Length: 120
Image (cartoon, rainbow, N blue to C red):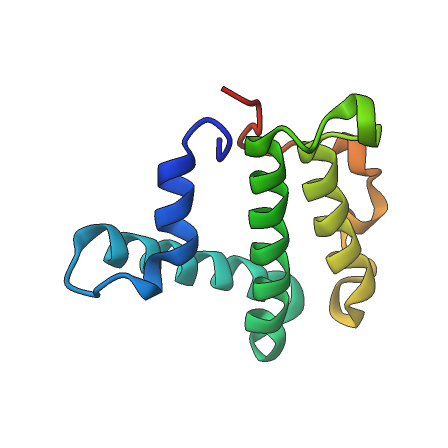
């Protein structure tokens, strides 16, 4: 999704830096808070922002590499979807509260993501 809609990605990732009175900034902020609440279900409230920042910034970098054409399967022998799945699994597997979570027992290639990083 991010590689297809670079402008939307930019608003989502830098939303808080935009004037709070702007509707896109409020929407981005709500989306970020929802993301943190989802992360909290995996790592707990206390560590949700730290892990959320790690996942969010990593996803941003992955999307930027995809948009710019620097993340190709031919070069890296992986896809953006696989990298995101790996991050999710690593987060779940490395947090004591979720080490036995079912996500952690799945291989990265079996996790279904609700979006795509296909370049436009």
